[in-house]
Amino acid sequence: STSTPQWSPYGDATANRIVSDAEDHLNVKNPITRAVLENNRFCADCGKEYPDWVSLNLCVLICIECSGIHRSLGVHVSKVRSMKMDKLSATEAQMLLVTGNDTCNSIYEAGVRDQSGWEKPKPTATRREREEWIKSKYVWKGFLKYEKASGD
Image (cartoon, rainbow, N blue to C red; front, top):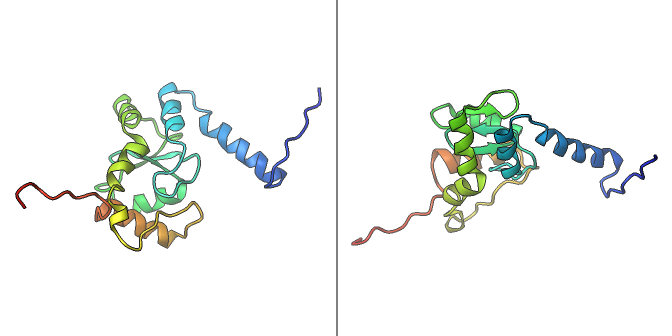
């Protein structure tokens, strides 16, 4: 049987790469790891599809470009591992399932609207744009939402 190629506005090579990325992203034998990847389909820092790196202590999945910046922060800030090449412990996998990108971003980015001049990087962002965002978010914690304490 002959299959009809699907039309893509990006051209055949890009359409094939997109399908290939999606298949590769979920081509993981461990069901918990696969669930973590399925639940975190976009990089926590730039939104790139199919991140396959993780910051274990921040509980976020990140793309390869953002992972390099996370590594440069040091393990005391971000302990980076590959979701495909490294083996996660059961506890690490469970933590990622329970928290993940949406929950962590709801905390680390809760106050970004209160900061003028900041916009979350896109997948096409430069290294410098990513670095400024990631440092501001995790090192300086500049996008947390601060509430006034009662009595202040």
